[in-house]
Image 1 (cartoon, helix red, strand yellow):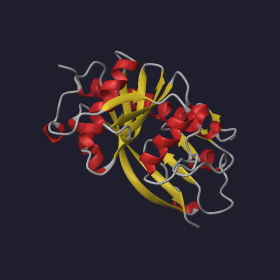
Image 2 (cartoon, helix red, strand yellow):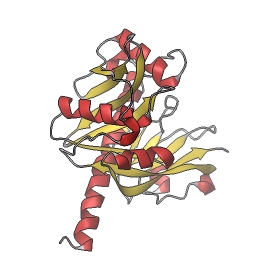
Image 3 (cartoon, rainbow, N blue to C red):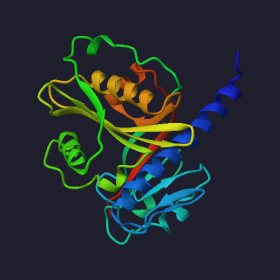
Image 4 (cartoon, helix red, strand yellow):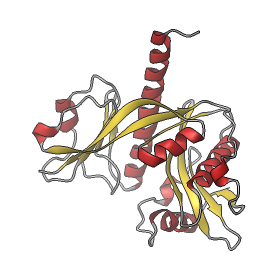
Length: 249
């Protein structure tokens, strides 16, 4: 039976993989918008304000300090945000407030996708990978519930990034997710289901397609609240806390 210290070391290693995977996803989104973000040893950061929903910095090591993070981002006006990957920073003195807390999650390679009861009676859907700019705009419209604003740009349609979509019988995207592979893990984010589609179906379908695209890869990400409970139903386990800070003054 593994010792407590071995389990902790394993979780710590997974968190480091998950944070770097997430930072590389943020980096790809920012670079698609023409931002020169920098991926360092302890912090990923963009010196210019990032697109909506994306942090200005992500800590990559538990030793990253408040000063090292703040020195790399634009704090001239409220609105910047920091993903405190280890929940260790205190950014309140710099005018930040806690936006929310979450958990890094990990799903071991070759975990069965299963069929949770909540998704068993759902309408069958066709899952596919988005491969065109038009398809990506349609995916963003379904994800956001409104017309695409170009947040996710065609430059993101690469070998290591996949936008996953579930189509109903009429060809409309009704569920989906984004995935990015870095090293030995695949990051799963932006999981969504439109009205009438169970969240479990979105998770199950996304994970099944990831297993087809990148066989034998562990899957990581972060979630909170109901989405965290859904992820756990699909074979994920929480491996460490993170915190999102937002500059309000």
